[in-house]
Image 1 (cartoon, rainbow, N blue to C red):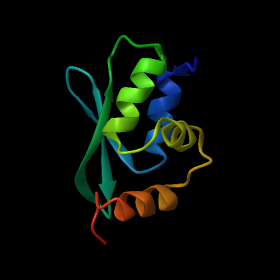
Image 2: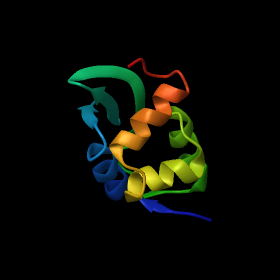
Image 3: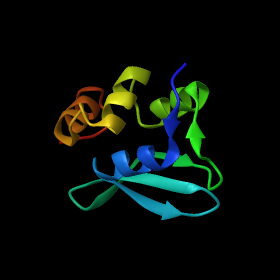
Length: 94
């Protein structure tokens, strides 16, 4: 079972083009070329750990498989590779 630290997830996503939009939860929206996209995820304010179930939910929200999401957060998957994957899946237009 994989568990990620919530702060590590937020930091990792922010390095890949996500920006915070704090509401009831810590929403993170993907920005491309300064423009907000429809790709987002969120972390509850009280969360310390993100368990396997939430990793699955968050990976779906950012349009990736579970392993790809972990790679995005932990940095083996670069921002450029992530944007290329979203474009290939039709989630972003060039």
